Image 1 (cartoon, rainbow, N blue to C red):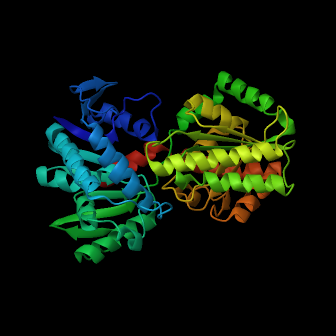
Image 2: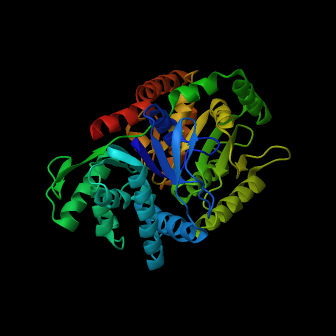
Image 3: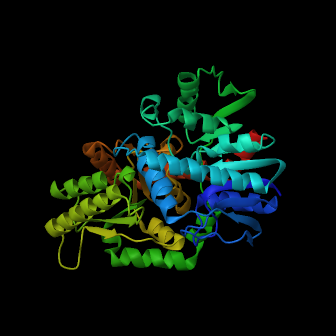
Length: 446
């Protein structure tokens, strides 16, 4: 029985841990805690085991669960709706049934491993029913929930079938965390609209308990990125990349995203194609490298996005390229953290232009990597990061002309201006790393 339990869709046993694992594994390890999650492989449920000082408690998902709970309800219903309906949300009753069943499985696993009065921290949109279910199973627990993606406006959320179940699920937590203050306000408004509750400030009374909804903007492991940026091998790889792409004669623009329709990759490539077409930049002067990490490729919208992007990349390279020199390099592949940091060091301009993003940690990674205070960040105003990184060149990614304006402003900026902007952004990211985020949330949870 453990005093601290993390509940997340995935276990922290993959190669190349993400920000969530970097933040929570040390806390879980130091408290002798447990992590409840899925291994990532269908129909696999190993016995509980220890991994790097953390008790791992696997939850089994069948191939059918993955199809309905994960790719269906989580990623084809909730994900698009919570990202402002950038793509239409798809609704199927069997998906909802599977989502409820899998959430109960996670709740039961957490209840089984948590000690009396333990703290349980549940994560993200795949598990929004878990806090309420866990509260019924174990009313003695302190339960926190953090949503890593945006939380939609009331009008959009109201489209969700069984919407009240989701609000009740989140109200099972003592503390509900969001990336932005407006998201917390949206949630509290829904408690009034759907349940007739009366929030006061950031708190609302529900079934004899006080539930707090508050913003806790997530961040990155700054020290990890800094160490990689200082590594001579990573720096040498950055120099090799620049040399291969045309050296100091060409500006290197960079995009790094999961291949997802929320990331604005289509619009970014369209804007770059127009800059080439109108002569603002030329193949001799600049090159765009777009890394698109494969993601959810069994979902139809993602397959269609891949086809659109690759068709446009081919058109631009065919129209504006030359023998041995392409204006756009497109990489549909995963890269290691060290390879990404080398790209960050090589890039003159980082393009982070999602249509909607809860935070976007790539923007923060780029800033953390730039120990030389060089480079420029072109950033969508619809990312959570925009409120912290206001010295970036902020753009409206829906407006291709505004994207071009932001890129042109970054190209034209003086080295002194760029260094001043980067210095301020680095101070912000260093002062608010992922460890501080986790500490603030757990202190608020009490």
